[in-house]
Length: 137
Image (cartoon, rainbow, N blue to C red; front, side, top):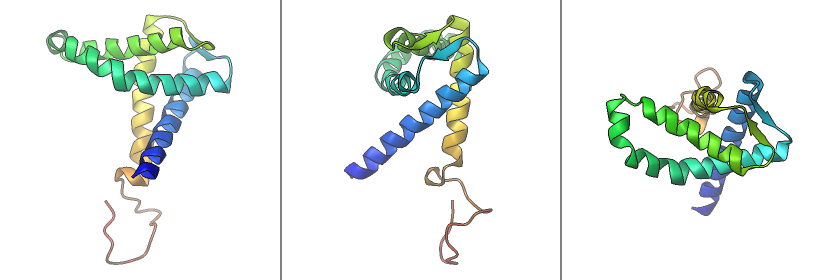
């Protein structure tokens, strides 16, 4: 269904935007010149993570395996650095900022998605409907 796909795309773009924004508040080495650069950076990071990152993970699988997954974090940092180079208005101070920011972005994104009702969390404190025949998972 096209509307569902568009909804999912916009939702993930918004989650990535919020994650990047919160991360820029936590790290002084990440700066956005405008809201538009933040939105374009989130869009570009989503595309880079969907297209380039899986290829790099496949190509570097032996190294990732030997380092017990640590090298996957390096790839995440490199993806953020690539987006910072591509998007005007997205400033990044260096590799270590990108490295730790990628961890924070992943955690924030996970927490936001986990809290969404469409992702399967049970909303026991705020039930959406009171139908006893409905199971909330």
